Length: 247
Image (tube, rainbow, N blue to C red; front, side, top):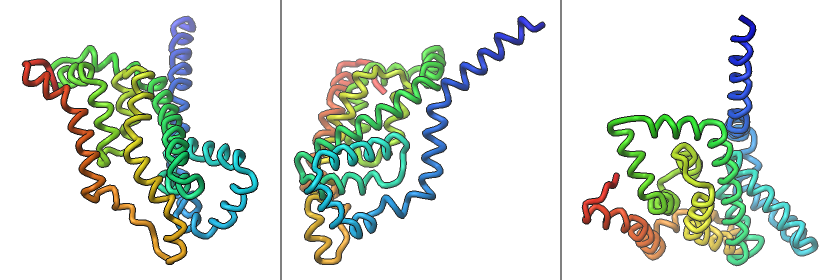
């Protein structure tokens, strides 16, 4: 009897260890949503801007390191303030290299979530989807055949939540290299827009105003992003015309 219970206990312990990283991320995200909102806000950036600039001017690379670590942590644990962090990158480091810092940190944070989700649930869920039938199986096959296009699309479309765009590829067994590349290049357009807004915050602060984050929906910005979305979908459309299997 003991020989039968020991493997079960070992399996439960193994499952617990696999799910622990994702559980920690979700727990920290839940706590952070209530406790850090006032600290990772536009108002906090406005009130501490002079101190931040002075520290940056005196200790540039330590400031870059601290900012980078903070941004990775915010994204990895899905804490509130990712938009403010992007604005801060532009405010402190200008559009460039601010965009590079923002996009790289966001990619690393997203990759940590991806790995945690894959280690915990991704492999088992992916195996179940692979063994499924009917509509679910067709969706899985369609995504597998058009992974690059789908990955770029969910990064380019502003309506797709960033946290969700990190989890879904993990559950669908997307290769790590493909996830990292599509994330890095896919978030550059939006990152560039918000970083440039952050670079102009000095004048916004002087006027006592708040930044216009709806600028990404302005035609001169939104249309090029939609154009990139069309390019991402183009391979899927070509397959459809040729009679290939698509979503």
